[in-house]
Length: 133
Image (cartoon, rainbow, N blue to C red; front, side, top):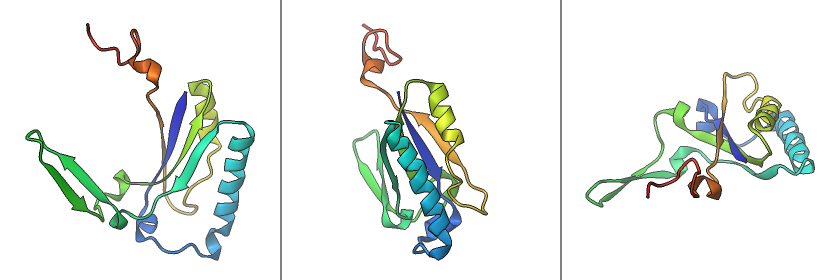
């Protein structure tokens, strides 16, 4: 089972300030955590995302038209500042790793969201996404 641990953006992460010396302890703690994930053989990928002002959204309309909107985006609480992708044997194992995830923005109210990824087996007959005959 693969899970994505999403770090929700904050006002400070959306500012895109360059990392200063005050963030060194966080980077060290996050690095140690990711090293533990790697040693356990469950880490697939991890990265921080640049602020939304450096991105865009693409909307799809029923008539086939596509619309592009450049960032930044107003609703910071709906944005992702980074992620960690893990592969584990159970939901409980994913929950245990998430419980150990360092606070991504110490001294601020912040949150992570954990979501399971679809797997190929989910689309096979009898899977969660089985298509009707």
